[in-house]
Image (cartoon, rainbow, N blue to C red):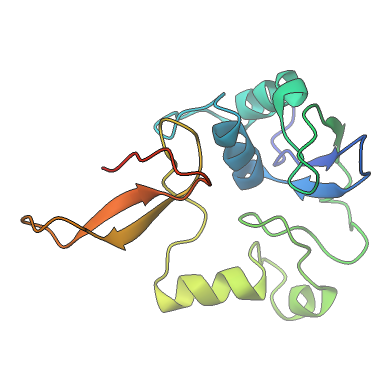
Length: 161
């Protein structure tokens, strides 16, 4: 990507034809789930986009589980994409009505509400073993802390940390 615009891709499953718009957060989430990126990796958007394109064959469809997805770059998002621009966190379309009120908005109303309430958006912790999201749970053992981070994969990989 030679320009400074945020990279977006439409991820299309050749098996079930489902599609999803992925921005930087969606690309990071999918790359971690495919074990192609570590949580601690820091890279610029251009490098992330190139790595995402190169890893399309190892990405898994969230609808049917098919491995190997097609990617279509979406550069038309900043030039008045129909229906509004995508949220930088979840990738859902920000409605035109919201953009009329807040022209500089980069988050949808749901993600902005989470930010306003002080909840965590975007940067999730992922299991270093399987790439599934980690969740804060009450610890089973009585130790110094009452809570621990646990893997949410089904079946669980039993990683605790």
